[in-house]
Length: 196
Image (cartoon, one colour):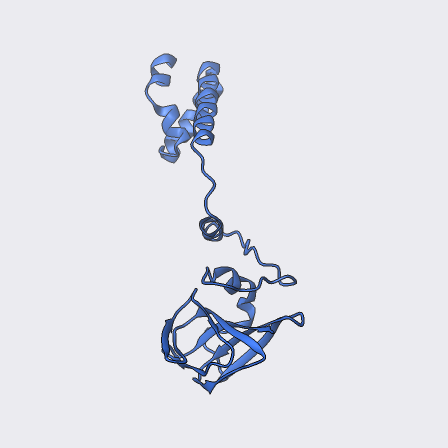
């Protein structure tokens, strides 16, 4: 066998990139066992490709990293059930859905369910699922907010109208009348009270 010609064919690079069929991979592995020069060159190609990948690597944003890890089967939600963050804006509902999936049926049987997930005296968070609209109300002793995990709803706050879906967040000012109307059969959200 002309090992020089085999090495120069590009097959080693194709192997490192995962472009070979199972049969071609098996043959290459066999060649590395028979010819030390092919094994040495394959090691050199692997090392060079790893260095090139490291030189061009970028750290993904936390949101992208979380989505990639989840797609690969890692359940790194980034949330600690014993130290949940105060929600202050729109975000990715996936970590919350992952952490509390055992509390969220696909088709809820009750009109309204609520699970206390945080209560430290200053912030109270509840995981709620509702199949019914929330009638007009107002609060003077806590700031109420919603972080939508599943479903869609319409919220009227004073004279303003908001359409909300998964990942959306809204905070309701003190002493302002508001209501919520469901657009989907049910909505799951983190209901948060911050006491003033």
